[in-house]
Structure formats: structure tokens, C-alpha cells
Length: 245
Length: 245
Image (cartoon, rainbow over all chains, first blue to last red; front, side, top):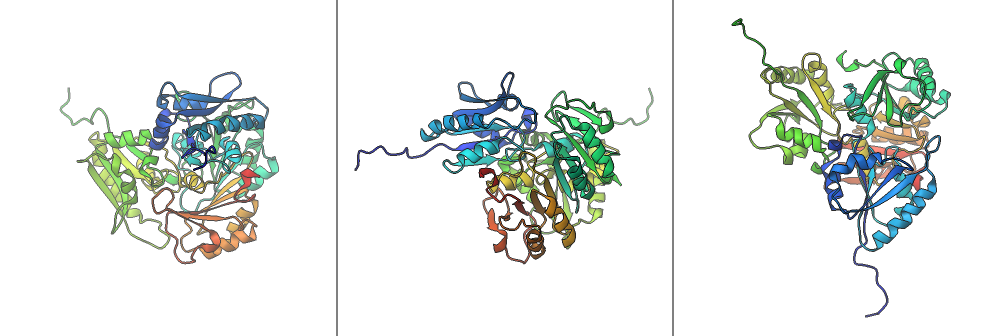
């Protein structure tokens, strides 16, 4: 037998856990179980203020866990500074090498417009990374709006609002159902694009779906200022009540 | 006081509960709680054979519940016979009028290509109907494939495979990420459409995601016969490992 240092029998696993859209009861049983088991919990947070992902998961996190906060600089389009993820990945490596699992809290679903992909990109080649899917904002908003999203042979298109107006119109024109994510400062442009695609009449805006301060408005009634990050617009070519027709 | 028969103080509520993609642990805490509480449980099932939705939810259903089975005739494109839903809605009405809640088990998410919309259409105008969103097959398949679905300003298009090949190609050509649902007997057509849209190289096929007999194949390796109903094809314009680039 050699005296050389050997790796531990088992390295830790990174679990990307979708904690759902906001209501703490909309986490999965698997997500809640892994949060109860993982010795290390990591999550994004604004540079000042509380982490939304941690607030959702709070009832499921036991006391005394090691917590890694990924503090995000606030930038215009919110593409986060990549150095934050570089540092987080480095901090993760020590825990993983020592055999400790890390649960990463992800708003909604980790792979649906989630920042978890930046960690995945840094870790997946060197460490075991597993994803526990969650309730995405897409289906949570449809449920909160009491409007079926897609059925039968409907085509669904999901569009980030920062896209050029021409691209938005081109996609919307072909869609049966459309979800526009990250509306932010783009409300006026979205309104024009939906009108050009003949989808504006029944478009609905929703913010903070499934939370106590959830708010639903016809798109026409939305202020053209800054929509909160957790908002979405849904429209269906057959109108809001298409399923009843 | 009149002797006339009065309605009960409270009618029952129909809860459309997304039970997730297959793994019974991927139901939400809210879904599991409502299943434990509801005196009546309803679910679709094939005319012969077991209900997939009930199998997923089985660990969360207490003994002794009233169960309403919606037996679905098997038809080519699986658009279910509407009489089944007419009969179910009539059976629901008696329970609801008597104040009994009904939990309807929905595979994946109720409003994402789910048959729950047919019940919703029949009940929502007369009774309280609420939807508990679930983990959709879309995000469950991405997690199982260990491939981020969409990030940044990616456009996601979800396409039912029965669409005409020309329509598939037109949509796929514009998409950054594509999910093709209900592949069934359409594998050859899907392969051609993805190739025409330059999306074929890294397209992945997955069936029975999150179940013990989950199966993942490159699209090229899929038999052109009948894919099972619970299968999906995911492709990304930047290739499977786009997030690592």
C-alpha cells in the first residue's frame, strides 16, 4: 500500500434544486428532502437585501447549515458578473473534495432561464452535478391566471423581452400561445409586438405569482416603467378563455 | 325561515393537481397535502390497464378515498373522447354540491398539454376550480438529460409532433431551443425537420423521464416505430453542451 494521499472514498454532489415560483409549498418532496440532508446550502442574493431563493426555501432549511451566499452585482440586463460564479465554484470545490453535498437553491426551475447554468458550466466536468426539476414560473403563472397554457397541437413560444422588436413580432406571429419573460423596462415594446401579431387583446400580465402580493393586470393597464424581475406576460391566440370555446 | 331546500354553506372545490413527470417524489408539498385532505380523487386511465397519474400519486393517497376513474378510449392521436369528460363533470357535480373537494390527478402540470383543460372547460364557470402547478415534462426532461434548457435571451419553442412538417421546420428554424412533445409515430418527420433547421446534430430523445426505466438516446438511434406517449425530444442551436462553451 502506498502512503500517497488518496482521494476520499466519495466526493460530494452539487444538487441544483428548483424551489419553485415563490410559495414555499410549491417545492417538491425531493427538493425538501435534499435541503434537509445537505450540509451546505448555496444561493444567489442581491448585493444588498435578502435572497428570494432562500426566502422560498427557508421553512425547509434546518438550523446550523453552512451557507454560501453568491452576492450578485445589480446590472442593467441582470446578466450576472461571471466572477461571482468563479468564486462560488472555487468555494464549492473544497466542500465537494471533503465529501460534502451542496444544495444550490434555484428560483423556479434550475434549467429554465436560471442562473444555475453558470455554476453548471463551471462544475459539471469535474464534479457530480444533479438537477432536481422544479415548478417553473411558466406553469405557475398559467395556474395563477386560471388559464390553460397549451393543449392539443398548440405551439408555445417563450420569448425574453430584451429581444429586438422585429424578432419578437416574427416569433409571436407564428405562436398559438406565448410567454414573455423578463419584461422589465420593455412593456411598451411588448405591447406593440403583441398588437402587431394580433395577440394583444387578451394578454395578461402577472407579477410575483403564488406569493401573497401576487398581482394580475391586463397588459394595457401595466405601467411602462420597470416591471419587477419576477413577472411574465401570457397570451393565447384564441383568447384568454380559449379552452371554454 | 323558509322550509325550502337551501344550498350547503360551502360547495366543494376542484383541485387540478400536477403530480409531476413520474418520480413520486417530484410532486409538490402542496399537491401531496391536498391529496391527503381531499375526500374524492379523480384521474384518467386507459380503458384497460393502470392509470399513470394514479401510480405517481399512489404513495400520497390515503386508503378509503372515493375514486373516480375517467376511462379513456384509445384513439390514434389520443384526442380523448369528449363524452368521458361530460360524464366525469356530471359525477363531479354531485360531490361538489355536497361540499366535497375533488383532487384531480394530472400528469406533469395540469395546464401544459394536459387533459385537465377538458374538465376545466366544463366546470370552471359553475364551480370553484383551482390549479396546483406541477413539475412539467419539459423541465423534468432537461434535468434528466443534464442539459440546460434555456438561458439569457434564448427563444424556446415547444412543438407537438403531429404538426405538418413545413410548420415544424418554420418554427424550428427560428428557435434557439426546441422541445418536441408527443413524438409518437412522427420520429422520421421530426428527424427531417430538425435536420432542415440545422438542429439535428445534438438532438436528444428521452422517454419515461425520472422513472426507473427512463431511456435516453441520440435522435438518430430512435426506432421509427411508435415512441411511447411519455417521451420528448430536446435540441439546442448551440449544441447539447452550449452552456459549457
